[in-house]
Image 1: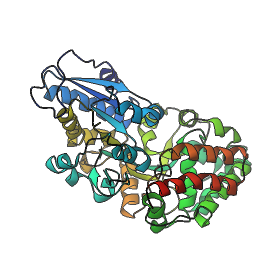
Image 2: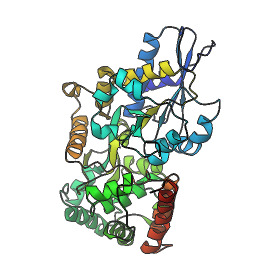
Image 3: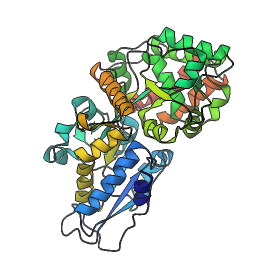
Length: 427
């Protein structure tokens, strides 16, 4: 895997003519500029490195110029970059109203509807996974035109250190009460149980998980898809804010986590410093590769729903110079060979051959995703509804961690931008 990732990073562009936006004419001498933000040893990084090799093998004379970007970097600069002549030909981008939806509304992404039908992507992706691929004229996901293509699924789960669980004499919980009992046991032993990162997405996803424990599908659709009004002082968010605040006071979450980033959290869990990490399946492949000193496992969050959906999207910028080549690359990432590699590397493939997934941990990961998906338990992500909402939620949960604002004040703070966006789009 390391060699494969290294090969991808050393791919260089060769000089040659650029193509027109339709990708017509000979591909000889062209370069496909590709951006993504997956680490080389992650499941997606591993699978996409192989896809790049296959792409070059099947497109003689074409080189892939791969540029690794940070998630935060793309999140903050995509609108500006895609509106310039520096836009790549294809890139990984976050799904949801506030990200892919916003760029589609601004005319910065290519309409992929015709390609989705022509190339069969609409047959490979289930209706629930297509939710994040389609956006209407307001930039709201779930209907309208295709502006992205996911080739994996993802969900938030509980990672746990089996050795620490055994030493503490606790078992994998199956109910929420059992889960909090496990947390209490660790606190009594002087151990902060949950690795957390307040400066990036993990803390807001835990906040959302707590809200989901009091939610139903109608509430999720109201919040995420604007199918109804959301009361930020209703039982869902009130419970989330108060419980999150209480968990900090009880010692389930460290007060110093307000300034921690996701990488800090992951490294701490990998280093055996915490028994629990609540985060997404995107960590799975890295944990498989890097954890050497203890046994670990995963289990579903003890509640009816969890953040999750299709994975991030392949999008083709409107200013892409090689659109046909970009479509071809998406095709390759949907091939069985790449999908099987993704599954055996710790990812959640959308079009793999189930019998080809041989790793026991990976099978469990995929089975849990399928279980969550089958029971209609994928609840998207809390930052999706409004542009800039990610930063609003980061600020809000940081205030809950450091106690600088009361839960009801934080709810007022996160309600305002959401309601302002509703007004902007005419809801």
